[in-house]
Length: 163
Image (cartoon, rainbow, N blue to C red; front, top):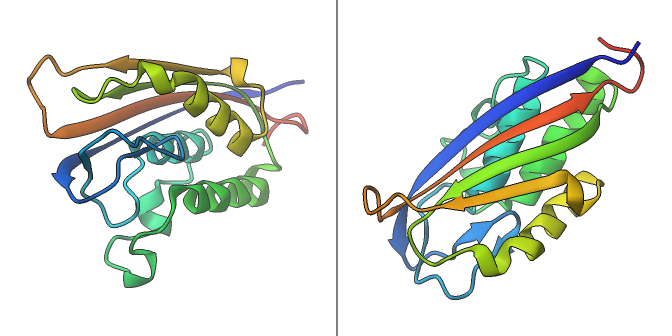
């Protein structure tokens, strides 16, 4: 019997000058600001990691990568995702990612021109087809112009019949 699980994750950071804006593993070159964060501040991958962990009751990335630990300063979020995937293999037997649905809220720059590249990069990191990664981009309508946020839902299927 196939067992499916749903996970949800969310992340947000303040934006500041002098930092690169990284989303889905890609740097957005035209952004004059980036996430103020202990790591690279990739809210999309952070929310994805939390979604994967939540599907199996494994906590959140703050437990595995506490911002109080100086060893994680500037850490690339692809490394965080890889580590989360290793935890999933250990705890849940390498579940299959069926699909990912994410929404990023950012006033500027517009992210639409980067959609295909971000989808492709996230798909590669998860070893799935890009058509399984759905992304929406929203603005805060001026409510939070110095803020970036992502929300991600994942559908996973246990490969071995369930844990």
